[in-house]
Length: 306
Image 1: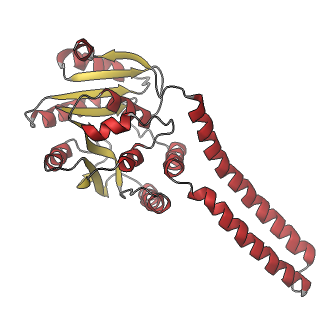
Image 2: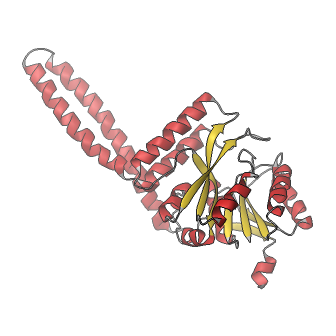
Image 3: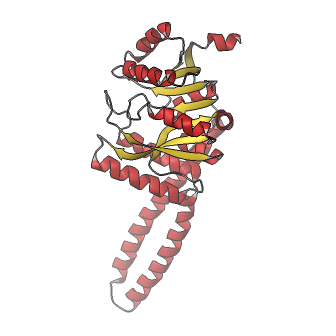
């Protein structure tokens, strides 16, 4: 049995086409499947459309959040409720072609536990988005101790034993692709061309992208904190050199002191901000609130009876 987890947020323009293509793909497996749509607080007609589709297709299951909890939390909720021997994560915007799932299944049946999609080309994205994404994945790979594949998003297939361990990891600031790689087991890639969004607008604006990137780094690396030690040593050396230059009369002493003070204070504030990010995450974890709250579950009645 396969479980397909689809996080959705205001996707009324695309959700019917997404479901049509997913069903077409999953029927080709000739095996049982479920499609779990996780409605992450949509304010448009997404919920109504999903419920209408579910009345005619009992392979559909719906998780309704009480509010918007975020894309990564929505993925986690779908994995929590998935019953499949393999779980596929795919977004609803059709940028990741559902047809690639069949190639992932082939790799999984050959013995791999995690099969992730690797983007060899990205259509319909700005030069800025492509450049920053490429740079970010490479920086993240350098900063973390976890082997993070570059040019890979959340689109992937995972064996149920991988999902079982992921369900036990309940940190609040979730970076799912990092969590999957941290768990381990055997991984392989399936290359594909990422398409333009079928309809609607992207949900990740620049602010959300920066926050998401920040979660990825701070969740799997403490090197930014260690960086402050190196910066402190560098500025101690720079201060000593500046003091010698002032003593020899190359620069006025007051100007040297002013420049050093202004620059080092700026660095101190930056490092305090980095420390604040980590402390804030400790604070969130200590509150021990649930990852999400469900307003409704549709299509899970049979599972609960069994």
